[in-house]
Length: 104
Image (cartoon, rainbow, N blue to C red; front, side):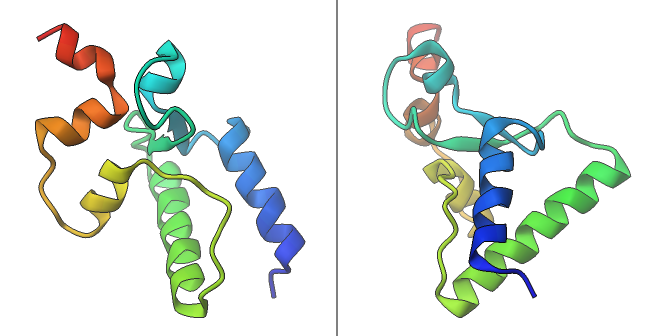
């Protein structure tokens, strides 16, 4: 059984980069725009082991939703849209990457 403090440690490790599943939004990196306190899934992780780690993260998210015990994990809105099977728009991308609108 995972205790509440274990959840907190796991979320801190995800947000700090100890576990590289999540990356800060480009807005956070560039200190511009919205969602600077949010995270995206790291698209460069593609090995079988890394994909298993993503699957485990998905299980944690599912358990949190089902038990109504939110995790201290701030995923960017486009991540939630993709998890819900919704298409992303250019506005969604601008929410996490403000420079995209300036670069065309």
